[in-house]
Every structure is written in structure tokens, then in C-alpha cells.
Image (cartoon, rainbow over all chains, first blue to last red):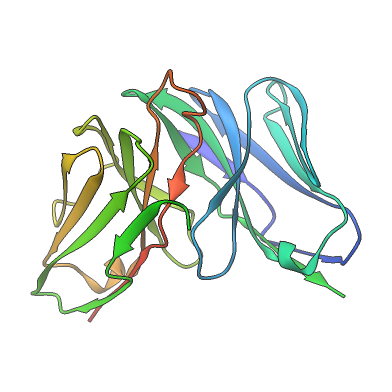
Length: 112
Length: 116
């Protein structure tokens, strides 16, 4: 089975840096996703980590440690529009697709 | 606009009704997915189709019946639903394994379903 744990809610100040952690226990691991979901909207893809280490993409970076079952999403220079839910998901491969299992999501509130 | 559309956007149905949700993607993908998103619960995968063939059924009750007539269209047929089936139903698509960025799923805006 899959067990994914991430904080329910976080708050941060505009312009600051925030780190959203995700820990997982899983059978059959292929990689780890991060998605962003604004209220009332569809999730949008942020990152996919397969190997250990840090992947940087603009203001967002994602880190993975497979041995520790741990990932984080780092958001720099926070903007008000970054207020959203951030979904961590572990992936396995089956039937010709990547099959994600999602955590409950972390609701990030950015205030002025 | 992600290239994945869903209709209707909102649906209210009684427990004895039959309705269908529609998803269409214009991205040239061959894998399509149905998800259920309930309040306070994780996004939950329901079904996966690859090249029109169902490859994953995540123990979904038979009152939900998917259909994939071609790689661009996906339906979810609903009948005799329960109030606890009220949720946001999201469709997604991706390239199949082996193609570039096949790990990236594109989601539609969802259908907000209320069962009364």
C-alpha cells in the first residue's frame, strides 16, 4: 500500500521562502510528483523527481531522497498567487502509464 | 486552458437518475484518467485507459461505468449513485510510457457532482 504524509496547512509572508515536506512509505516506487491546485481549479504539474537530489525550475525547486522516503517543495520569493494547495504524489508504473497516489495536499496561505 | 475539457461543469442528480460525464482532450495523448476529489480527502484515481483499453480500475463500485471510444474522449456513466458520491470528478490525460514527459498529466477543470 501507499502512505503519504504532508502538513495540512502552512502560512508564509509575501517575498519569503517556504518549504513543504512530504514523507512516504510505498510498495513500488517510480518517482514523486508535485502538483499545484488553486481553489476551484484543476491541478497543474510542477515537478517530477526520479533520482535523489534537487531539481530547480524558476522559483520552485523539488528535492527527493529515496532512501529516506522524503521530498520537499521549496518556493522562493513568494507571491500572493502562490496561495494554493500543493499535492505530493508517489508514482508507480502499470499498464503503460504512470499511476500516481496523492497525499491530502498542503494548503499554503501567503499573506502580505 | 490545459487542452482538456469536461462537461458538464456542474451536475445535480437524484439517486435514481442516470447521467454521463464527458471528457475530451486535444493534446494528442493516448492515456486518459478519471479521478475523484472529495473534501478533506486525497485526490483518488478511479480508472486509467491506454489506447482505449482500460488498464486500471481502483476498486470502483459498479455504479460508475467508464467508456473510452477513442483516445480523445472519455466518459463516466453514472447510475443509482449515493449522496457520498458527491465530489469533484476530474479527468486527465498524458502520453503513454516511453514518450517524452509521459509522467506529466494534464487535468480538466472537473465536474462538480451533487447527488441528492
